[in-house]
Length: 101
Image (cartoon, rainbow, N blue to C red):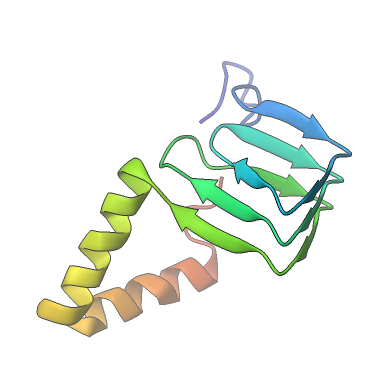
């Protein structure tokens, strides 16, 4: 999402220079700059996607809750019940960076 000036980070909370160790970190609506995440659970709930600049990650674990969890469950159902190629194509698009904010 962008503001009237086209700045996609204007709606995100700015988090700068923090070190997270073993924490549960909520990612939605945040812009992380120069942060370090060590053995953290990174939680995404389906809000405004986070943005990371010059951040370091060591042994992260991602958790999806709420709307994000519903999306993962839908993708799993498609993969396992309809046609796995649909999801593989989706991952191909993700690898290309389609939809980056």
